[in-house]
Image (cartoon, rainbow, N blue to C red; front, side, top):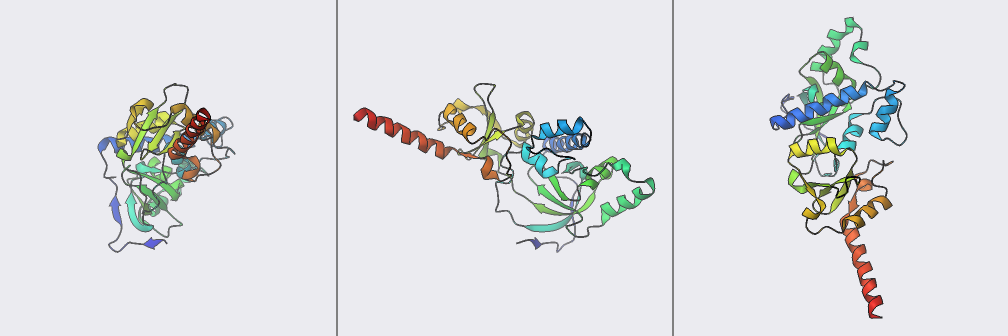
Length: 277
């Protein structure tokens, strides 16, 4: 159930409260998103953007911040026990993944710019006006509502957007490990809690973010207790987890290694019975 928690007035979240390098990494990711949005609605640019986003149905405009981050960040929505509390806050647009879906900052008539800046900087309105989802440990937000104002306020070098915010949890870095493939032609993967595996579809971008976050990158043989790598990759291909999904449910892009272990045990037991017989 959604709960409004705003007893002491708006919070000042202009600084994300993470390390300097984590802040800089999140800022660069948000700047990249603004740049990619510029390709939208162009004849060749939209095709490139659709390919990069690997969206099965393609698109006719820029992609929202949630879809963009979901492509890059494994286990993004894994932690589902976070409170559904919303509060007002002033947020630095440099830390927000917005979306320029219907136009660009320069499309706003000059005589409307000052009024928009003042409104976006001070007026909270309802969550239908502006609502951003915050990952506190990453120093990063994605815009659920109020997507266009992100690029606008960035373009006009404004330090703050007045918005409603909800915090979301992300697994602590020690729970995640990135595993580089033994064969460089294979997919990189992320492993959570030694059991749950997701394919990294944009591994170089993902590794830059997660390494700054504190996640280690290793080789398959360096992680104890894993099933055979080729068996795991066969399971990945069987479920097409290396390809784009029509669903954005975390479980639909996750392989439970316990299932692979159990299948291996069943096959080993079957072979043993055959030998005995």
